Image (cartoon, rainbow, N blue to C red; front, side):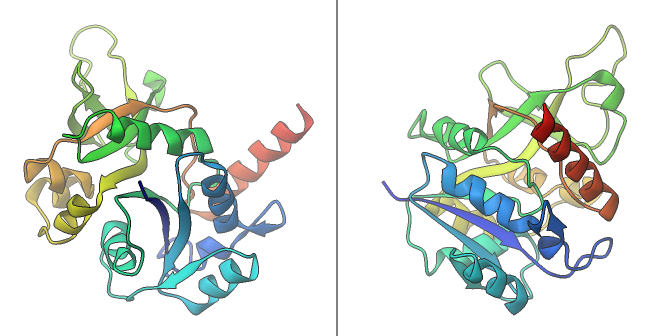
Length: 242
């Protein structure tokens, strides 16, 4: 079975232009993600899908594979679907290029969750999180059924603490898809819930797709701003001396 990991990366960013190439521990942040993908046991092949020659050159200069995609791709899923046209596979894994702390074990767990049943078409990850972080709209929360199916994703505290202390789960933006499903998802139009929360996975739930949620091996820190990058840099320094 061919399982391809694809890292979507674009140069343009309102809050952090050139983010994939920002230096982290002496090398472009994106390369930390690619190295994690290369260390994952379940991936047969890894490539970066980008709309920018500078990113492609940095990736290729490090010895990894890069594919140029259209600058018109509206989302990471669209960029994956375009790259998949030249990367035949049975399963594709979408690993965010701004998650430099994403572990190889997390990537493997998402693949294993998808492969747990032939009926599963999309899998992702979540991890328990402190209740104090739940109000942060930048931290996406996942509500998950007992069997592992996603019920909802939200930037709001879900479930709402009407009574007692809910067990919140932080969603990690890592997805594994069957090849046919990836093509179908890229063809879906934006949905009302997606527009309301600015969360692409709600489009899939509204269209009737089941998303299976596995327990993440470890947490990650998404980099949206230079301040986020500084936090990750501090984390890596502490890890190096611990």
